[in-house]
Length: 88
Image (cartoon, rainbow, N blue to C red; front, top):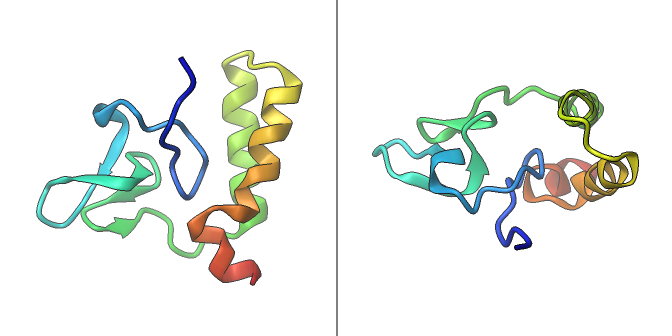
């Protein structure tokens, strides 16, 4: 089954509620994963898009994800909510 929800920072699938970050009130985020977002804020707010691309690529390679899938994930990053503000 194809994921329907993706982190708006790193593109990780967040269909599984356990993979989602938390809001200030402890509820689960509808937009960000647990690695990018906690307690209602981005974990690393000063991160640049190129840094995120490097992290995403490294983590996906560690999981032996095919190169074409990795490239698709990298290509989508600039279009995610977090990065649209920066690159627009």
